[in-house]
Length: 172
Image (cartoon, rainbow, N blue to C red; front, top):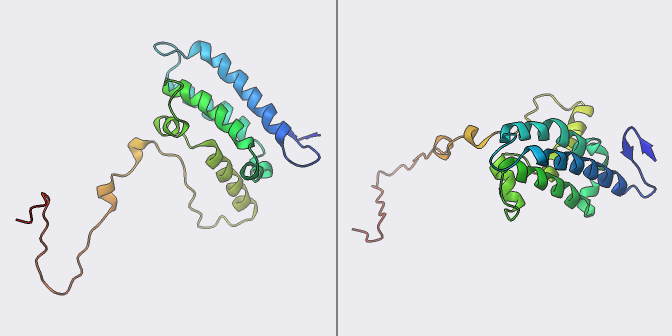
């Protein structure tokens, strides 16, 4: 049965829905492959915009309904395969690069994490628990804080003994 664009089967496994959505996204990605070659074609910014604007919403449609199924079954692998296809195009990388590395290179959140995030956000908003809400959002590696800017070392020792730090191992 198809209800509001979500295919529901009698056991609520959503296998057919995920298969249908991934096939739809794969067709879009393969159509893009003609215009996204290694040395010419769409830039990585354009491909990333296409992913976040067209493919990701297709993959995440109705996620609050079926997100819990991904943990119990292997349906999440289908979503990961689709994200991997577009990540290879965005990064203009070889097929041998791992999926985790591709997500880091492209700056995209892995789809299984994004699915859980979408489902949790829906629960928070629909549950009216959104007062003083701090929700994570994607940041490019260029926007990350430098580790030295976050870590502060404080010395609250009462005795004034000198601290000796030896970097060469000689203790001299």
